[in-house]
Image 1: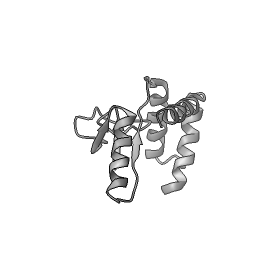
Image 2: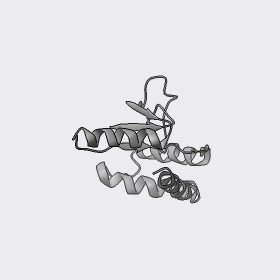
Image 3: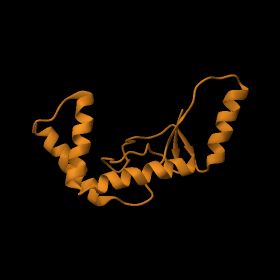
Length: 119
């Protein structure tokens, strides 16, 4: 199962669009950790196996990072020596870090800590 934490959309570092076309829409929403816990407990009681993903959005705007992501994606789409597939991710992340002056790394660390606090 995939939950949006206090959100109807899957939280990503960068979302293109305003969600009006159901971009990244999640099937389940939880507004409190207790709701997710209750779902997990019910599944366990029913003998169901599996887990869930909880998508936790940023708690503040990260426009400088958004601009860096847009630029890195534009460069990648123009074919400026970007790898394909899984090899593209580290290259794009490094380019975003460079363009944002390190702000993207700081924001990713903040998001990991936010996820841990909610877990």
